[in-house]
Amino acid sequence: MPELLRPRALAPGDLVAVAAPSGPLEADALPLLERGADVLTAMGFRVRRAPLTGPGRRRWWAAAGPEEQAREFNRLLRDPEVRAIVAHTGGQATAGWLDLLDLDAVRADPKPVLGCSDVSLLLLALHSRTGLAGLHGDMATYGLGGSWHTAPRTVAGHDTATTLADLYRRVLTDPVKRPGPLPELRGAVPDGPGGRECWRPGRAAGPLVGGLLGRLVTLQATPFALPAERFDGAVLFWEEVERPLSAVWQDLHVLRMSGVLDRIAGMVVGVPHRVTAAGCAGDAPEPSLRQVVLDVLGDRPLPVLGGTEVGHAGPNLPLPLGIRATVDSGARTLSLDEPAVGPSVPRTGAQGD
Image (cartoon, rainbow, N blue to C red; front, side):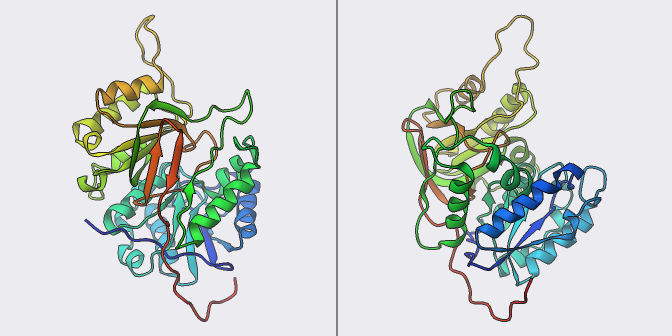
């Protein structure tokens, strides 16, 4: 099993590439993408959009065919001027080119890769094969350019976009200080999204592993499957979108039968988005996500923090794979206990954008 590979820390003025490893840019989403790029610029980075983020680039449900998507992503991995890669959106396409990844380029020059949703499949595959601590977090179009600006103020009353920009900047640039407790984003207004919930009390510390639940389960059927040891003592985080609760229940049982739920130390569940109880028979009461999770866990004494800021329902906290975190579900807290990045390497001769 590869050891943890921290990406190199970003520095002010470094070049961040916005890429399309999954879905295309929808015509009406261009202003969101441009605003997302502006957010990265305001954080102190230079930004370059990869060609496949251009309007009109599409093949079926993807920004391009698998070979073309892999070529573009691998070029970004090999380009010494590019210091981080941010996905612009998710979709349904990442699985088509995982086997074309240049893993040696990742090992030679580890750089932060950011994304969620379908892109969590890419992050998990890179973590499995190289140990890279990819950053499960918001993407450029619908995150940095979208939900960051429409979410209510944080529970502490601060502007969400400002809070997240400061947090992401610290996570990406500081190889020394641990980020510490992650801010609670939701639940700030009476009729807004709910806040974190203690579904089972307890406290656990361990490396983070997770992503979109269905993609995690899918990955385990491929050569990029996470080794069983990756789950030992881990804090498993997951979210789901646009699937029935019965499918979530089945996926969790797959993790149970494969032994994952007996290896982890704690669980963090994101806010579900368009996850319904469709399929319940007759007049049977519809279960909640909390009931489904606890039903599958049985008597396992795992702390479970629900309603966490992970997923499609709003802004995402940055959660680096493999980095140690502490979850205290009774206190409704989640903390990053060590830096997500390693020391940067001095570079010379960088060209202007």
